[in-house]
Image (cartoon, rainbow, N blue to C red; front, side, top):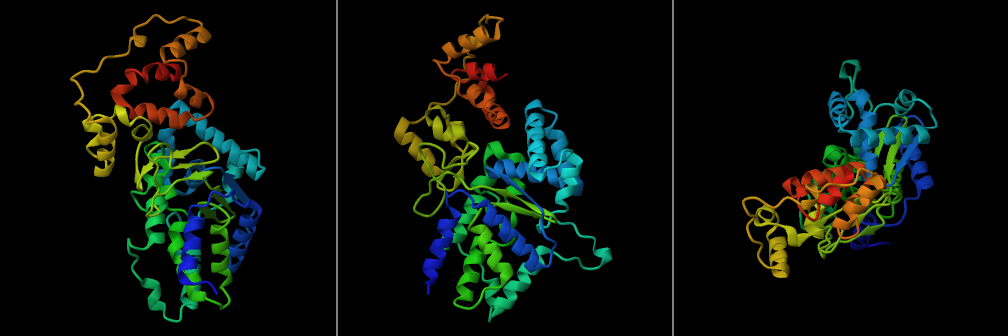
Amino acid sequence: MKTIAEIRKEWIDTLFSTQPADRPHAAAEVRDLYQAAGFGDPQNFLWFDSPLQASWAVALLLTPHSNIWQQLLASAERTRPAREMLNQVRAEICRQAVLPQWDEALAALGKPLGQHWAHPDFSRGFPKLLQTEIVNARFQLYENPANLFAVPSDSDDLHRAEQQLFAGASSVMVAQVEWQTTSSIRSASFLADYSFRQMAADEVEAGARSRPPLLAAAWSIARSAGLWWPFANGAVLADRPTEVHVDERWLLHCAEGPAAVYRDGARLFAWHGFSLPERCILQPESLTPGDLKPLPADFRKYVETRFGKSKPAGKKAKTSDILKAELPSDPAARLESLRAHAGGRLTLFERYTAGEHTKVWSELVALGPAVRQDPAAADALAVA
């Protein structure tokens, strides 16, 4: 029989797993979970390679049920990159649902079942909620139900790890600058209703006894996939990352590159569980005292130790000469001129043309005035 420490370590390993999702198994377990909870058999399983793309899909599927998301997405679609990206997500939802029309695909998933998104009509009586069934199953499992209400501590490795990864308001997956629009969706997946910490505690409580089918199905989904969101007639599921780096306290961390990379190229940047813009990790030498001021003290010390203390920004930084140059009218020749000015490579432009429209545009906006200065100006002009 496994010890408590072994069970909890297995759940931490699951939290940071880079194994590809077992999509057929996860879908089968979602069906088992719905059946155990007394819901209908779900027909649609929409898979995405990262929580970023999955959260945009969830946002679109929430629009018939949420005025807030109707307004947020209507606002986002005023920009061409966001409009193109959302159209791609709509097309992908239609493709996976095997329905040609967006309205049909939208209706096919039905209402959201997550506690944060369900808005039941109590005038018709108390509705059946997925979260209620999970709570009931947990109460039946515990010999002493008071143990269900134990307050988690930051000294709990598993609790701390998932809070700083995706569950907390300042978690890396929520606070990442380039992913802000749908941050609340990523923090309110099924795992917000039934966390890894709770699953680990329930497995310890169950011991050698038979596991309640509802809870066992939820554990199996967590071991087979990344974040996921339940709907009345289906689910949206995200795959796991291909690469993850953590520190000794199980907090997402990498000083030299992304702390997590997903199968569609989406990346997370973090310093000991603190979300940072990409530039802070990849170009720390460019940070000014003003840039460093709101960042963690140990990160400021790291930058100063490695590159020396930054000089305060001048009153007015020099605008890149490329913005004053007369560029060729031919698009191909113009790109060559910009590439030459940038030293041979237009990194942001290459990522933009590869499909990272929204992310690249967000990074350019985040640069502020520096977007008109070298080394960013030629790249920004190529994207624009």
